[in-house]
Image 1 (cartoon, rainbow, N blue to C red):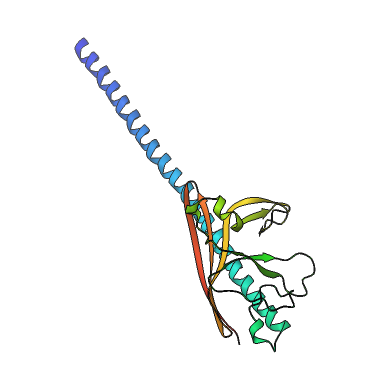
Image 2: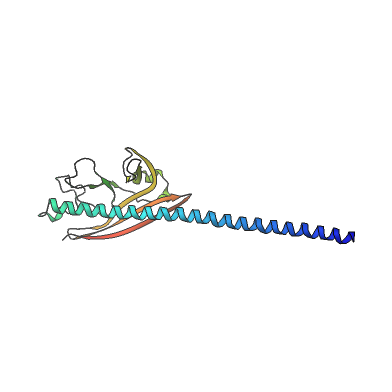
Length: 197
């Protein structure tokens, strides 16, 4: 009778250890799934913000075009002037990178301008220093992204506008937004065609 009791105690201990190991395995799997879900959510959030910034960049260029056309309807060569405030017709160049920038103060001549004329393309694999001109800043008061650091902190997002074709009839440009998530560089691009009508 004593032998039966000792064997049963060993069986209960074995069952308890098996149960604990199954629970630990389930906890590790659940923890991994939770970590992956959090990472996926962070990347998805960044993609949504980046797509919004790309759309904003494309709309900024369209705003510049419409403002130029309103200000100079009889000068078709001025439809892609960099800054509607400039009286001179400084046009956008092919294969040149620009930064869409909001203007402060009087908005009578348009809210946006293009500045920068940066020779190197936006490419985060080249390092942060080489892409510092493209960095966007997050305004603490408004929650909006901007190109200047006035009243803002550096964000993780970089944005450029590059024209691949420009003439008096139409233009094609690409808005690219890039960022780092951990050590990996991500980006999203939007290609837009506009017509001078």
